[in-house]
Image (cartoon, rainbow, N blue to C red; front, top):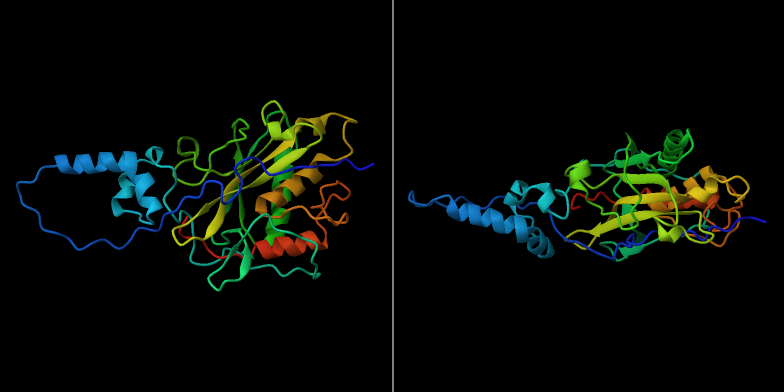
Length: 297
């Protein structure tokens, strides 16, 4: 009897759960002459207020002030918009070899023409991935690299291996961790965990994974980071019939933006009957790789 996953994205993955809005820095305002007698004190006051309040008020108004770059990353709740964003896609879009319709998206939105499109990662910047090997098999990092290479080939998105880290599993992991990863969105974290640490893994759930998303000042939502947590029960012989590399692929597909489907022949079916991406999975992944650039996040 196949083992039922009933996996689900971790709390906080929803693109509408905590939307933030801001826009790229506008062009500098014309210079204004100042009296020579002015002191630096007013500027110190402005920068202090900016550090405390500016990152909350101005993004909500769709404004990214030119001086916001002077505010330390640790005083902001988001990185500078457009970090690593290129002018065009980093890799060609993918056309699936076999047309199929057995796929679903985690989230959709309206584009500028009013059409319904999936919420996607920007194809114009790399998706950084880190692995915490704590409690994992010796080949865990290599399996993650192989699985993300499969996703890159299926989506046309670019994945970058940022190596091995020691980062605890956190069901409420922030999308922006400047003290750990600098002034950029946190890389995707992949690791094993248990239900005591990640309650979503309780019961017969063997993995959770999904993206975290933000909305720019123009109302467009994009995925910017995410997590994949595999249940340590997968490593207990005889406890499940599901090989953990198959669960890893399934959860990484959630990370990219695929949802579950009822078709039992697809990897994105919640019952573990196959271990590799099938025609419907590949068609959905290809569609998720055809999103728009996202310089505003």
